[in-house]
Image (cartoon, rainbow, N blue to C red; front, side):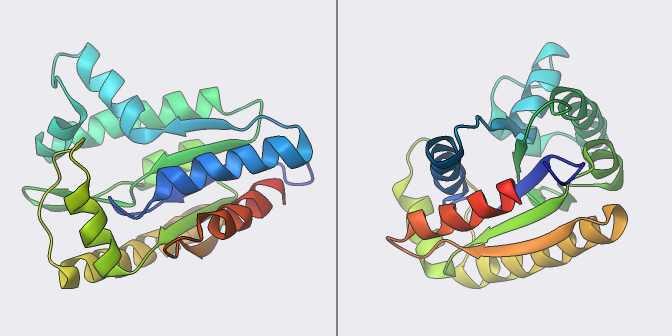
Length: 196
């Protein structure tokens, strides 16, 4: 590796297809370079912290916790991820902003990104109408309703949050479009970023 930092944060709003892009990119890297990529999810790390403390029973309850408690859980999750990602190329899968009862919670606050020290923040984006239809078709999650306009605003706000991460840490920011039926292309862009 030429880059001393080995973490790429991959973000995208719910329904954008981020997990599919991430998993496909990891497969592409394995096939082309023979290298395994560690995938860590801030939501999963937060869920583990919150579950151990008895705060939640499922992941969807996390965003309904008081924001002060969500911040503390984020801090502990960031420290855990920083420790786990020291030895290999890592994708940190997360959301840039989390919709709560009291507005958006910053998913990548200063105390989390300074612990993780990413080399790049990748925003996976898609057409707002497609995201709305994907959310409606996914019975596996309980998602808050958002209009197409709200989804567009959410994605725009995520860009600003990603630039803030870059400002704080020196990370680059990259936007990857997950166009309908072209997940392999989006994944190839992410694979290139991982192997840079």
